[in-house]
Image 1 (cartoon, rainbow, N blue to C red):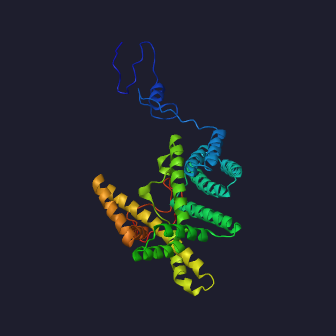
Image 2 (image 1 turned 135 degrees about the horizontal axis):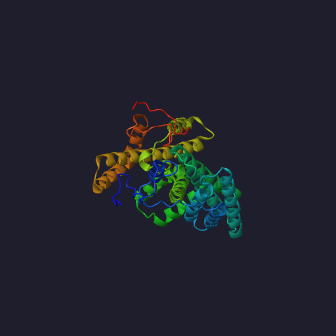
Image 3 (image 1 turned 60 degrees about the vertical axis):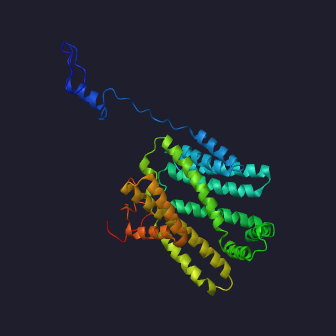
Length: 366
C-alpha cells in the first residue's frame, strides 16, 4: 500500500476499500459546505447564560447603585446585554422592572431620596446602553439622546426635591459657592474679582455639571456593555469605534436653535434668565460633542500617517490647548460633518442596515 497522501491532504484509503468522491467532498468541505482544514482546532461556541442570570446581575447593579453609582452602572449594562442578547424586546421590559423595584427598595431602606434620583439616572443610562449594544443598534445619535435624557432626569429629579424643601438647585449651588468664597478669598483685589467672574459663570453654567455626570455614567456603562457583548462573540462591526464617530445633522440643527435662542433671550422679558441659561448649556454640550468628533478626525489622521505615539501625544496636547482657547477641535468636527474627511458611509449601519438618526447627506460627494 502506498503510504503517500494525495494532493487533497486526506490520508489514502486502505486497499480493498473504495473511496467515493462524496467522501472526499464531505471531508474537505463538511456536511454543509463549510471548509474544514485538517488538523485545525475547533472554536468553542459561547453559551449564552439564562435569563435569570442576567436579571440577577441587573438587580445587583441596581442595588450597588445606591452605594457606588459607577460600579452599579457597569453591572447593569453588563446584565442588560446578558438579558437582551439575541432576544426579544420583552426582556428589556423585565430589566426595567427589576431596576425600578431594586433601586426604589434600596433608596427606601436608606431613607435618602437623593439616592433614588442618582440611581434611576445611572441605571436608566446603563440599561439603555446595554439594550442597544445587545441588539447591535447603538449609534452616535442614540448615544447623544441617552446622555441628554439622562441629564434632564438628574436635573429634574434634584430640582423637584429642592422645590419640595422650599428651595432650588440654583440656590444650593450659590450657597456652596459662597461657602468656598469665604474660605479662600482674602484681602486681595484680584482674588475678589476672580470669584466675581466665577460667580457669573456658575449662575449660568451649573446645569452642565449634570451633563458631565451623565457622560461619566455613559462611559462606564459603555465599557460594561462592550465587555459583555464581546464575551458572547458578538460581531465587531456592530460595535461603534471612536475613530468612526459621526455626529448626525439634527444635532447641528439643535445647536443652531440654541444659538438663536441665546441671541433672542434679551427679547424675552419674563423668562430671559431661563432661556439664556438653557441656550448656553445646550451650546456647551454641542461644542463638547463636536470636539469629540474633531478628536476622532485627528485620531484617523494620525493612524493614516502612522504617527509615533510620542508625536500623537504632543499633537493632542496642542490640539486640546487650542480647543480651550479657540474651539479648534469643535470647528474641525463641525467642518467634518459636511466635508466627511474620513469618507464614512452615512445613513447606514456597518451591516448596511439603514438608520434614521445618522441619516444625513454629506455636502461633498465622495
